[in-house]
Length: 508
Image 1: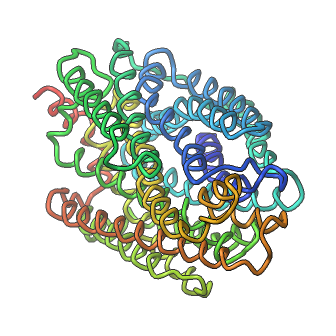
Image 2: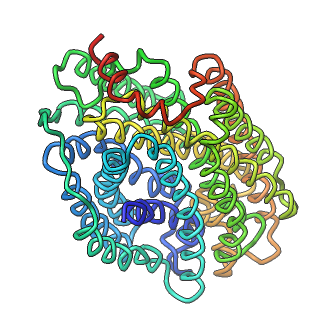
């Protein structure tokens, strides 16, 4: 039941990537005429709301009952999916994704906190490994389901795939999930929640809109400045608050701080790369939505195969070595993505993405176990929320940063080639590669227009730039993990130390 609920969130997050090129088509071609910036918001509206509400949702679950929080989250998730499915503009779809993010904020921390409280110490590491491996299953099911539905139905159908799963999860959960709550009834922290949402939303807005406003413009400076001010205020408030939603003193513990950072960067790379590569497969290599989804299946197979084995690897080599190895594999995979071109073979693409997937799977399980080990057991909801927040913030920043780097390079690359087009067509062509392909499909541009080749090359150039930046950041993080993360070969004992060490750190 817990894995089924997690699967709903993962599938809800992954179905969107395959449909993005379809949404970029002109209205007359069945799309929403979404620009590169708008598709970034379709992804990040979900991630930002999800991340911003996680701590508050986890606190509500800890205080009033995790089972109730899980069930409420599933209902809200279904409502958001329905809004997105029947959206007639990009703005409405973005709104639907935001509502879905609210539901996910209640579902995700409830699954891990219930798992942590239900499983005994010696079984917890394996349970967490299986929990992490479900991400791989969701990553496979989401794109394939999306591709199949796009073959036969309109794009909105991809958001309805979760509805029957949610109904099953609600029915099973009412019987199988035990009730649990935090006996201490810790007060809520609405001020901290608001400051975190404002701060991170402003930061992501500044990054996504940077290519449009100009990185050195007054607008960008104001948004970046506002983000910094809100995040500093959040840190000050949390430090002084007697009952913070995020206990900042936990970051004094290298285990907590480094594992949080490692998870953030893994999802920075994963969300950002998958966001770009799904568009690359359809827009540059010209696979159909289903064809692109099927060709991403090896990623999920690798993740599901590797994740359950990581506790054994950590027991033999240590969390620091496995964490560093995983991040170095992710960086290597990103370098491989940077080598993709207009004529790259699928064999090269598959090997590269499997390297990425293996690195992600190696990193996620030990990092999650280390993070949860540093949190008091009766604050499992906060620990789970921290884990989920680092994932979503990392993912949101990955889409924002890597997507904006690609958008900047793409706009620059097609600038001269679209100068003579009529204003409406020029705006569509400058917005995305999918827009150019839509203009060709409608007959606005001839099938042999050189602009199509120019647009594909501009997209590839942007993909190269974004991937290199991501590789450098992740490689640097690998060195930090090796230097500061404890080895902790006995992952079960690490989980067993959870309450003692978490209380000690929080009390410093």
